[in-house]
Image 1 (cartoon, rainbow, N blue to C red):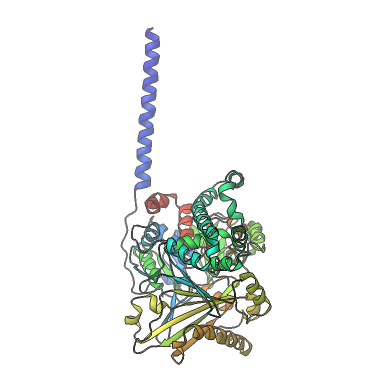
Image 2: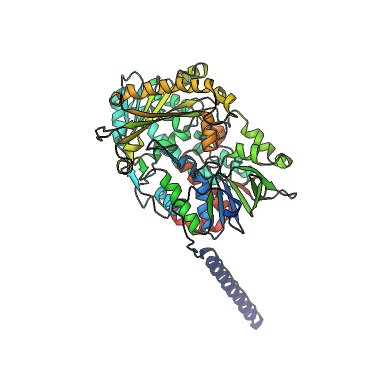
Length: 580
């Protein structure tokens, strides 16, 4: 009896000791993970996106090198800098920002890649806003655009559809146009909503080992089965009205895949992204890059431009340990690439180590994974000395017809038959533009492009690609200008400046691969690939940006967060509150 009591006492003591040790361990772990580094508040420069590369400008004792300064690269750089890591961002162009950068010609300022953002970014309590604010230290404000934020129409101008952020109003508008399709319209919005909500589950499952990921896809097939379908497949299951299908897929240009090839999940993500309105950054997209660059500098890091990386340094143990720029070797413990998987593996990984990523190179060469379309852009400066033009703060999507697949097929045969024009006026969307550039307005016209048509000019010097290339550009410029002036005849006689960029222009200024501004294809096959993640087969080499998540500035931002979490799990602990 006494021995039993002694045993019980020992047991209780053991349990109590175990609980105490567990509690102390948890407390110590919490203290470790919760503790944030102290910002050194290093000096910041007036224009941190224009520092030219030199060996002397490279900070010493680098922890991380980020190749490319697009949204994904900047986000990863900021998160890691805030974890106390010394970060260097290298940009091949003469200004940082990637698709965030702007350029000026004849007093006109043009944006290049960010044309609108949704996700309730205007609300400081929204997740989207918190994620941007963490990267920019809250230095970027957002101006709401018109509502409708998009207008979808045909080139003939016979009918237009207003895309409202309020879904009740949008559904009423569509049902007024298609009274016999009210059931299909309702089912479409229900499916869009459920698909967008399931994207988070898919993203989490991708963190599992490949075997468990594939098993999970089967287990959650009822919820995730829609991710295996194209936009055309889903819409054809809802309605036989081809015109309605064309209207519901009007924004396929936002992810670069026509409905017959593009994933319905992308259609759903974009539709829900603008459910609470569309916004544009006050002072333009470059404000985001400048703000992030200031954060990096404040934490002791640096962004250097005119710094084309030619190779990633990899040792005989298959570990990345730096990069080579202009014949100079720069060393760091971790290397991050934000220029996309194709360019990283095909161009930057040395041939001596390319066998480590050959499987990935083969996969991204698959026609269902590789992008097969680019974009071309026309930048238009408009003389408006009296500020008499009242340009819209929305985007116009002008289609050749509502049969997007037929339009694209015709375009493949004849590149003068442009299937879609996107028209936007950043000078109208940015409330500070008029004061910063008085008497001036700008328009941007974007359409699909085929890299194969201009590939033969890729090695020619920029602005010196020859008469044949200039003649091609002039043909397209005339087509794009006709589309702009047909829709906005008040601009006739006011055009003061025009510049045109093709797929090879994208490669030169944006560092894209074969002009693919959206990265890898946004097909069902691509979205379901388990291996599209930050960690690579090469130790200490990580990927960030669009290829890790999805396309667009917000998609690249999310890819930037995911990459930072893979490198430094503490950064997830320190930012988990942003996702709530």
